[in-house]
Length: 303
Ligand SMILES: [Zn+2]
Image (cartoon, rainbow, N blue to C red):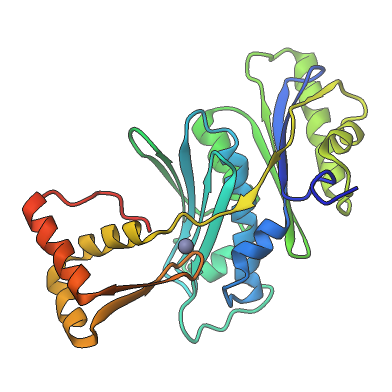
């Protein structure tokens, strides 16, 4: 069995005929190692980024139109920002800001790293390729990404949603189960609880390298489970010189031109993948000349 057919770096959507539940399960493995490879983050920071990546991929698989999900945890502690982006095509990228000199222990929790005063925020943004951006912000109430996301989804969507995120070395398994609200009889309520318990049991055990069809049949042995074809999950960073130039436009000529005059160029690095970009003085001057001619700056700020 090769790694892909064994469920590595892939996502499967499923639903139960015998219970009012549908869900999605994913494993991020080499994609996650690649996403964090060029970063020198403390172990606890890597752990949170893995969990956020799993959460973002679960959410991205539910998008109805081409869009990017941005999951952020923000505060003013040792790690003021964790950020993961995932697309409907199931690509993702991740980074964190870690304050210089911060001493972060391996057992540091998300709230402790984010904000010792308990003022951390959890922000979910849906940025469609076409159309209006949507953003939801909630206080960070729980220690784990799974609990915070579960609480956010259950409140914002008014449907009962459960989330499991489990690290397995440098890999991560993620699962989301959503209750179908139109089925609300007493039997349906019992069947939902049964399905939640079944997933809880499987997630309490070590990873089993099964294709997800087998994994789901094993997990829901008492149910009639239907499985969609698996889709690959990949690391990808869409950063480009064009995006860098757009970002520099927003910073503005007043701030950048003196630096460019002094150093000959503006050197910047993609926070997600580490790719270096250098914009020389002449290119920068032409960029701002063009901007002055065209007036309105771009509103898209991400690299
Ligand atoms: Zn990049």
